[in-house]
Length: 115
Image (cartoon, rainbow, N blue to C red):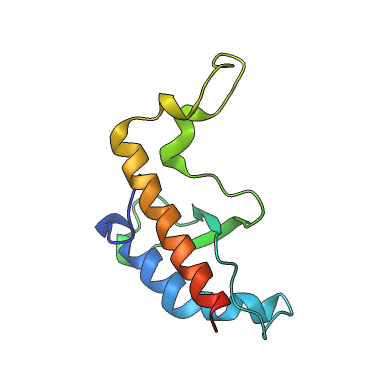
């Protein structure tokens, strides 16, 4: 997991948040709408191998806004080999990190509703 201050992806983070993100909703014909409250984006590095980090070009592979997973909770994901996975399978550290996201999203949602 990489956080928003990860140096490896500073070019991507800066470019997407400050240059590209303001153009997303208008490009979808939704210029009067805010970006979804809870969403993720998968990025693909399209630069040739050996490109300097600050010159890398990233493209969006897909946006997720209807079924966003929290990577810290993957241990609770039921699969063929873990059919009985549950919340109790998540480590205490990962639960604490996931809880931060839940609290943040709740605060943001409450702020929108209070306007």
